[in-house]
Picture: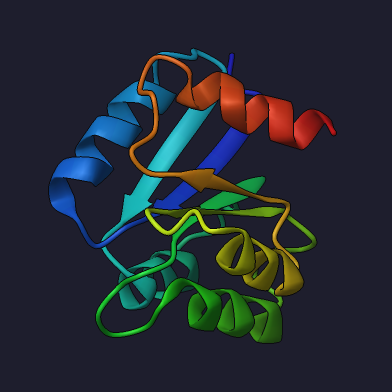
Length: 126
């Protein structure tokens, strides 16, 4: 039974596939994936489905993660759903900057595919 709906937004197809597979190892997580902000907004526009949490890549070509987050907040699509950034930039300054946008936390790439779902749930449990 699904108890957590997660939207994963990442422009890198290989990482998106690995993360989606990894998250779906948890039978309680329903994952929908988008290749960037435009596709995420298109998905949200055409469907009543709403995520409980958004896992959002930071560095994307057309619209970076913070811009996607800002637009989601403006549109009201999240209804207070937490956003977790995922990034290869793990420096303390970058992490603080991302948390300053209102993110629940930051997961560093490369992530461990075997624990990604547990990591997301642990962040949400805080």
